[in-house]
Length: 273
Ligand code: FPP
Image (tube, rainbow, N blue to C red; front, side, top):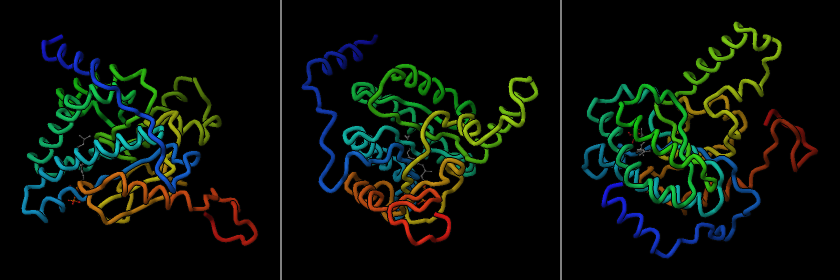
């Protein structure tokens, strides 16, 4: 370990441990928090343009917003947070912006890994990460390995992720299993498909938050979002704070999730819900 690493370890060991399980703020029912929260972090570019800054400044400010939201999820006891950090479509952006995003990811991991690990946060990824630049892959692999036993929060990074690509990969996996005689076509059901997606055994997202005001899913978790509650806010991602997330969760907790049944207010059968 480097001298800097040793100093960091000592600093962490000597510092007052943070209380990680803070009470859930007033107005929120801790028993009905989303088990899986997914976020489409949109509006970085517009945030920067509004301020006369390059788009990359918006992404950089977005990383700061992310730190606050990860911490809040950990403290409140949300078990899984998936964030849409880079889509399969984002490669179409100018090369300099793509490179900046890749650098920000490495910077984020290097800077935050101590605290993420200390906070019992497990890092995972979904997406075709094998196509990311080597330096990102190495940093990700180290972060995943280092935090693999942590239980406080799963921070799931969607990187080079596209829901359609995920479905293509899932179909290929199942087709090979049929070809190899492991399963019969008849055995394929919803559970098997869910389990063969990148999200594997993770629960479907209960709540999907999208910042930046656009009302669409943008190729994010299409299968898993079948019964997700969706919250769209005009707030740009770099301005998104735990108080905004609380607003989304309060609204979520007031919804009647019926999953196609009749739910709490049974009696007046409506259309599919
Ligand atoms: C969408 O905003 C945002 C992205 C494509 C990238 C999100 C990335 C980060 C917040 C930082 C990097 C992530 C990690 C994990 C370190 P946009 O640029 O499309 O905004 P616009 O719609 O206003 O143009």
